[in-house]
View 1 (cartoon, one colour):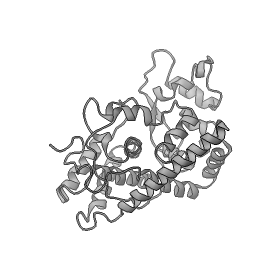
View 2: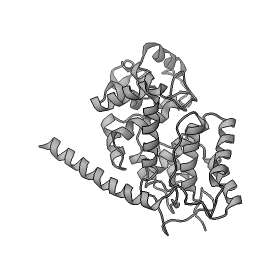
View 3: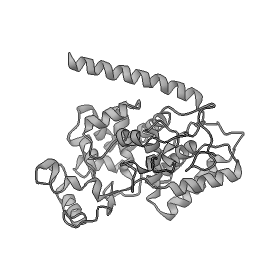
Length: 328
């Protein structure tokens, strides 16, 4: 009876969020700025391209900013707001979220072309798409028309953002809380095909995993050895980084999923998708590892879905002049 009630509750929750998603999609449109800022997409593309040229890692950072924005109060650019009570200083973002200066540069260029028209939330969504595309991944039409939040939600960021230390069930629940399903969990996790992670995010797997006094048994042996050398148990630098997608650092491809099949997922939350998951999730990992086109299609679909999480539209919120502060 208990399992039935839980399943019923999950279905009701997902039905509620699907209704919200349909409402959001009816309010957002890919040609929202067609007359008010006709060169918007080319301006953003140029700035993202320059940023990635300067630092390849920036593609992953911009993608992650959009993700961390949408999971807290929806896609409203609240993650960009300065202030000690802002989301920037929440645990999952502190000394971790990056790329703010790139968004500021994009906003400046956009303002020069069309002042007071384009929201920071929409800039985040376009920059995330361009980051994926310029790294070799898929493209999709970004629905636009979001407005910017007036407040941040640090508490929500601390409680709602998926963590590399979360159990799979917790991650699934956090996704469901914003209207995303298990296919979205797996496909969006594939965003880890680009970017780096700090020792502090995976060191728990190396020396005393879950209090066992040993290394996480799901890590491939040679990879575990390399990571232990990079992140020693004593006097190690927790801010040292390594590739999330071993042997395919900067290319957006399906190699991340191939790594999971071989015990080479870096974060615990990555490897769980294959080593400690349900049949449905494991099958998705295997399918994505075998067919990049399927992964690309599902990833693009999930990004559109995530980009439509409770956006501010119409007269709600504002169009910020600077992305880091509300208008005075």
